[in-house]
Image (cartoon, rainbow, N blue to C red; front, side, top):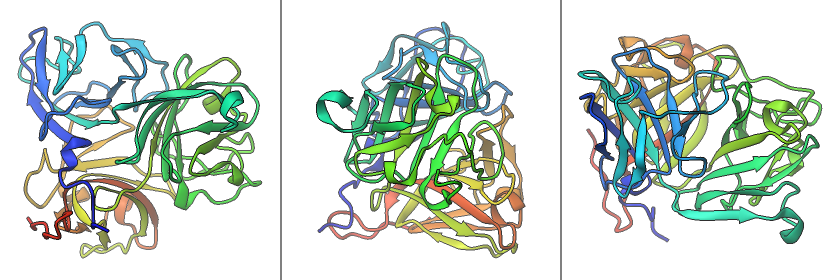
Length: 360
């Protein structure tokens, strides 16, 4: 078996940076292979606009904000018809995406295959779901309508989800994040995090993510909490798992030392998002587009509408087979503290032909 089947990660994930020019109908070409993104997450680097997430499963000019609890809303001058091109997106003049001389970063994922599940017909799950999926890259965008009764939702991955990021679309509600390795038992339900806040991993008697037995290669669970499953409310869930040489979702323990832990991923990371779980902490996002060379010290906070921060407090090195922590900030390297991360590849450590990747 080959080490990886994804020699070019930009088929499925890419970082893209640009400088705004305040013109309508501007094409932003996704870096690398120039794929059509199915999930497009954009943030102004030099301004304090919100984060915006668009996807091809919901209406294509409708955004949701990772840094707020707001319902989804129309954005007339962000993405413009035809919205998603074969190699990127078409943008307008909104300050959140294309203000003159302002700088931007987008993190983009591709799925490509439509997905639907009628739970009563297939006997897979108890709540109907639809969306888009790639089993090759273990990522799906799933929409469903809540029932108010604890149940299960088909996700299409064909393997156990490692992270799920979900949002109620039609109402104000905090985001819900499920993470496999830190979901400790709380009255037999899964713990949760919130993408728009910095809370620690938290138990919920209302059962946002449902019981342990509801997670499988075909389904994930939802409880009765309105953030995940209010009767008649609409939801979107971004569902991720690991693919060798392309993506890694894991955990580590900090050492509180500037010579921090080395985190093995099996590839050179292009994107790393880190969150402390045993206490409050930022959702720190680092990538190799804003910092093409080590040390990477330019980061965004998913839960905040801040401009790029550039200092040593989130220093990491991105190397051929993982990333190395280079500072003592408790947000990502406190002594004995627990952290989760999600990373996507720039290059595999070893490609499908057995050729090693290069260090940087």
